[in-house]
Image 1 (cartoon, protein in one colour):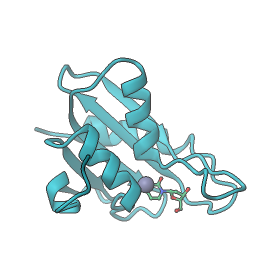
Image 2 (spheres, rainbow, N blue to C red):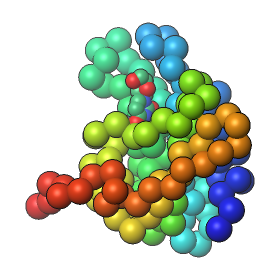
Image 3 (cartoon, rainbow, N blue to C red):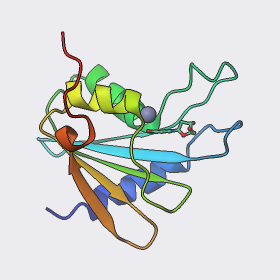
Length: 126
Ligand SMILES: O=c1ccn([C@H]2C[C@H](O)[C@@H](CO)O2)c(=O)[nH]1
Ligand SMILES: [Zn+2]
């Protein structure tokens, strides 16, 4: 599948990032198995620990709207380079989209595709 539309949506979401501390904008777009797209940006907080990453913003929006079946998530950042999800996001991705694809895109139109298992092998489970 061509994920250019999903990457484009992630690029647009990135512009909504609230990043007064790091100035590092991240955008994510998740597509459900039914083809619906939810987007998210990172939202920072003065306490730092309360910061929410773009990937989790997008996924939490989707789950809170009743969607649970995801095909893929695209992630981009203001660095213009491939931006892999942090450890907390990997754990959330593993739980909510264990079979999903993670598409990293840079500003040259290139993409790298991963499965959750590639990014978080031997994960914690209850
Ligand atoms: O997976 C990640 C990793 C980091 N960030 C954000 C959090 C913070 O606002 C900024 C710098 O860490 O990037 C994300 O949105 N996703
Ligand atoms: Zn994260």
